[in-house]
Picture 1: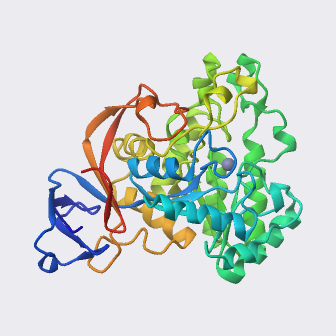
Picture 2: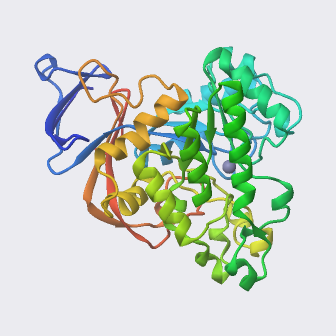
Length: 421
Ligand SMILES: [Zn+2]
């Protein structure tokens, strides 16, 4: 199918018609006669969004999400590439498992699903996994992470950083000092004291970030910090970048909006790892994202069955789904506040994540010759989040009932219309 998208507003604010044929942007004059015309007057286009942090639960936990349902959730949220975290069962720590996940993504055919490889075997934190074999596999893995767990042993972290340099890979760290966070349930502070829940101090995150930027400097390798949540963490990343250390960082949409005040009714929908922090942290994260200290927004989409969320706070699972609300939360917290424009949104949600993970054909300019990965959003429209209308297999959104700005109307993947009409 070929398309002529008329009157689109580009990320830089200018207006243009975009022609798509055979998977790529082409000159309008070279479109075949039978192309479909879609009028995008008043709508914003962005390069297809790229998520570096997605939990798809397959293999092993298909009752919560599969590669196919996660892909559908992704394109409804405007994503054309997502990155499947390794904490599946079996763990994605071999060429066989990452190739399986990659093939499932291809079979679903809605967006690219790029597997992330585990740093250590079975996420045990002690023995490096088959990093080289995963990099050489059909899935060409470039991002490695034990996410869900911290790579705590500094020697293992050093070896992993050294290893991925061979093929320009990156280690994505879930920064959580385990001894300081044993049995921790939420941010450590006034609210945790009031609620009588065991706290999770900011220093538990910051201590690992500080250690690892120094290891990245020592090894001259690439480090990515997952889901930054504290003002102190932003300061450390800012310092490291000023020093020339190759570190990048992500923030989740929920940490840009929610604070630990939401825990006050013990509703485990707000239980997440790392935890919701303070208003001062939220403001520091927004400022860091706006000035580029934080490179990207990543969803940490973490589907959980209702049995594991509809229970007492202390036994509920950590995590929230996020693919279908991410762009709207960024518009609400960053664009509507005047902190960012749509060129910045394109950078933080597409260009920069594609660059960090070395995903070809994503995060590219919307220009003739490039693969047509494209998201269309009606930025003036508002919607009420309804968990029962979402495509993800799980219902654990903290935003149910929220009115949010920005409705994704179309998603094109490799020139195919995979969402919208
Ligand atoms: Zn994590």
